[in-house]
Image 1 (spheres, rainbow, N blue to C red):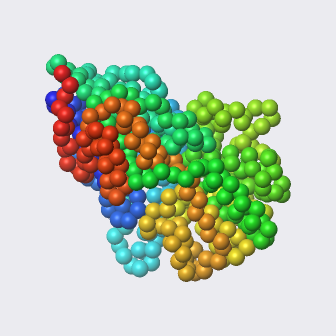
Image 2: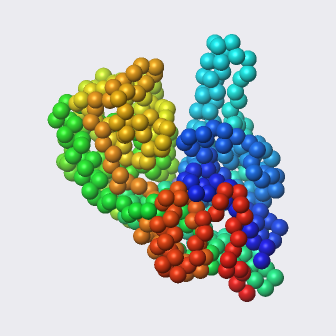
Image 3: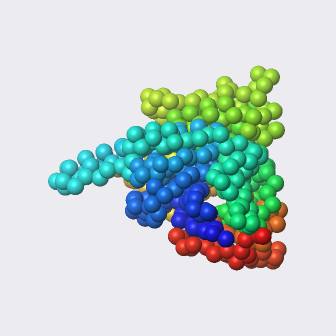
Length: 470
Ligand SMILES: [Zn+2]
């Protein structure tokens, strides 16, 4: 069979998702994300390891930047095809890409000022600009719907399923057929944990011969979310008793909206003090919340039931959305009783710096990490117990109480990943989107279930051991 699979990104690592299916002369990319973490600047630069002009279609699983962040670069480098995703993914992606291009522009201007001061003449350019983002948006077809099959190319059919990871996230089924042979490929995409606060449970896996599964947490199962919620509420109560504030570095998509839900419940049900003021200090998260509000039909039953009867977890009297920098700066006058949600989630930029500047050095306050902190980020430094961080050029000794609450993961744990693979009935499994130490225990578990497992290497064609089904 003329089928080729290549993982260019998220191959034995968790970022830069970018996979290629080649079949019958057609080339379909799945995601085109940025690399994040150490050494990523260089890795994100062109050229791509394939000719962007040769790609017919890009199918986007969901709107996280490590899955969409290089799409404008792909377009800039000559991609002429269409980009296909769910409606909610399109709306969130449009927001994320606009945000990312403005951050890149600001970073480049700052760096060029610095170089000028030093008498350097060589300037840096952002990877892409607003025009590339507009052109990317123009190429987008947002009509990929859950549970509907559509023909991508002759002999290539595609069906999307709810992956339960973030709003609009998709698992995919490709059905290839021609010349008396066929192959079904089930691709998990980033897959959510069961019983998420907003997302539905991931859909039942489709039947397939080949399964391609993410493996971010292939080595473990998560602790229960209920314990994590109780822990978060306790941190808030204790911090306020000490006379401090709670600062939470927050990812703008899904995590921010989940936290609003949790605090809405905790506040209306009296588990945190009535005087609590909750600030969502992230214009990007505020805009994303508007998109969630337009797609309440995609939330799980429990989440949907929270709206109505005068109840609205995205709008209640203890909650304030701060848009302008002036509104944001006003929060700094509050010594105690504030819960401040601000970006970025790994403390790599944004308004979180201002709030850490005012609270990180105070023993009365708390900083709570509710998401993964990658190596090399300030978030990771603080979690690892560093003696000092530099914020806006000034050293600060962390004296606030630091908490990591891990039960809010947007990714499925090991048992659920293995169960999804079993549901596909696949004889052969490719592991992607995980570090090798997380992949190996999952590989062992899946092999015990009777399937062959491979871990594609970046850019190398991954051969199919099972061959095509005739
Ligand atoms: Zn993701």
